[in-house]
Length: 258
Image (tube, rainbow, N blue to C red):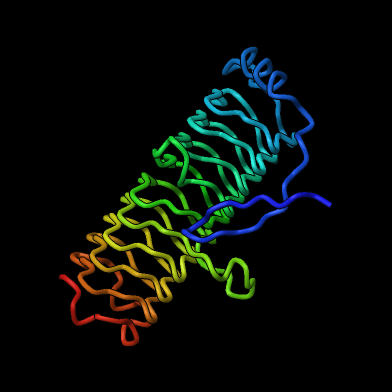
């Protein structure tokens, strides 16, 4: 029977089965990356890279789509512009990782390790492609400006009792200009987040804490704010507010800033 790996996600302890060592060694991964160029990227597509310490490595010229980084240490790794489509990053250590401009479409980032250890830096997802991503993580103050999070599942899966006890923390995060159209962020923490100019059409904000968040110029057409906390939320020049849902059942709607 595989041992259990205890990881911190969204401030709570989760238990996840550990993966066996990957099919490649750290030395083999390093060698493939060192040979890689923009014209001839390292082909790590679909590889099992789980349970490896790949901290500080440069994956900019690598195809790691469909690869498994389950439980791997990726501290300060560079994935700028890399192809991580459908990659499994569950339980991975992501302190200081740079995913700017990366392709994370349909990737899974559940129970990722963000807090703890010597490195305190948040991962960066600036302008990353993250449509249909699945993510539960502590990301207070993280940079997701311009990220494409269409149809992403960031909220609680209430049918899963284990995951149902956790939530994504994006308190104070930079989501300016991000595209969250159709995303499910239910029960997430977004107080004081920067959502200026964001596309929030059809976003599910059920029970989301949005106190002090700045939605100036955002498009909230069809967004659902049922039971969301809007105390101090800035809704200046928002588009589609009349077509938003659940505002009559939102908390502290009388305390919004317009």
